[in-house]
Image (cartoon, rainbow, N blue to C red; front, top):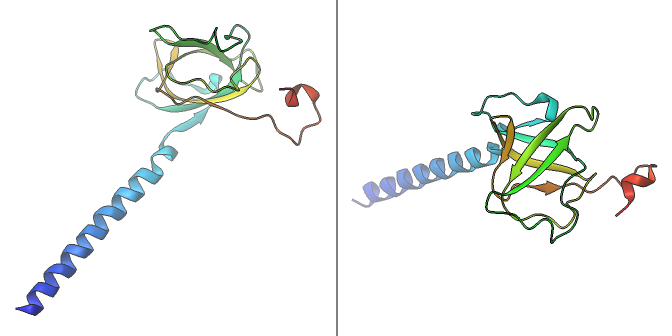
Amino acid sequence: MASVRSRLRFIIAISLAVVLGAWLAWTSIGGSLETYAGPGELAVSADTTYRLNGTVAKGAPADAAARAQSSEGLRFTVVDKEDPSQRVRVLYRGSVPDQFKVGREVVVTGSVERGTFVARNDSLITLCPSKFTDRPEDTAT
């Protein structure tokens, strides 16, 4: 009888380990299933999730008061870092990082809907300018 219990416990423990391992693998690769893309690389397919990387274009709200979002969300334009002629409008809802401003590099996760990149809530990340650059405009705060 004790042998059956210990085998049952062992089977339950192994099953639980397999389920938890599968969940861990699934959640860890979740971010890698999103394609990094610049404004010029986005496809119009709404079922594809992207991590849009680019620079905030002129016309974005400049200060915290101006960044107060309407019920619709925050709208701004992202331009490609290498080809400024490539641009996409972004609709974002959620908290806006303090470092968000024109000229700052950002990454936002979402998909393209009717020509506008619709971001997931609270997915906006601002990237710090490189401290290893020689260009003074990249290190201005």
